[in-house]
Image (cartoon, rainbow, N blue to C red; front, side):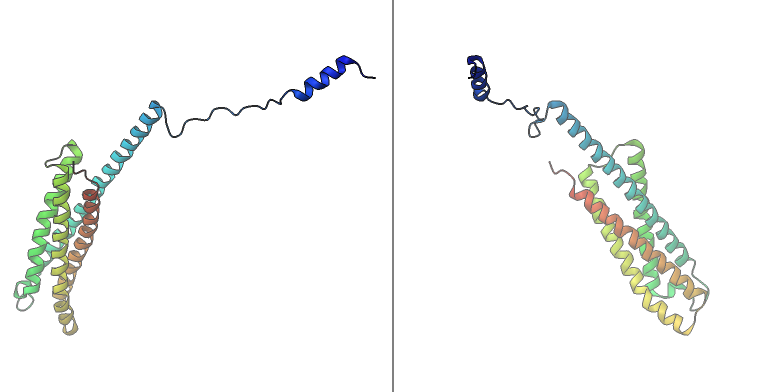
Length: 203
C-alpha cells in the first residue's frame, strides 16, 4: 500500500508541463537598427566612390593610349615622303589618314588634359551628365573616323605591296596600324563612357 505523500508527488509530476528552453531572440533582419542602416549606406557610398575613381583612371589611361597611337600615326604618315610616287600626299586615302590622325590627336589630347585636371583637383569643368554625354559621343565619332580612314587605306597599301615592298609601303602600313590601335582604345573608351552615362542621375 502506497503512502499518501507518494501519490501526491506522482500526480504533481504528471500534471506539470515540461519547460523547454526558449531560443534567443534573433536580430530583426527586416528592420535593421539605425547603426546598421548607417553602416550599409556608408559602405555603398565608399564602393561607389571607388568604382567612379577606377572608371576615371581607366578612361584617362585609354585616352592617353589613343593619343599616343594617334600621334604616331600622324608622324609616320606625315614623314612618309620619299620622292616621286612614294609621297603620301599623292594619294587621297593617305591624306585622309593624316587628317583624321590630326583630329584624333587634338581630341584625345584635350580629353586627357581634362581628365588629368579632374583627377588632380577633384573639380569638374562641366556638369557630370554633360561631360559623360560629350565623352560618349566624342569617343564614338573619333573611333568611327579612325576605322573609316584606316579601312580606306588598307586596299591601296595591299595593292602596292603586291608589286613593290619598300620603305614607303612599310611606313604606310605602320601608320595604318597605329590608326587601328587608336580606334580600338577609343572604342573601349566609348564603352566606359557609355557605362558612366547610363549610371548618371537625371535629377
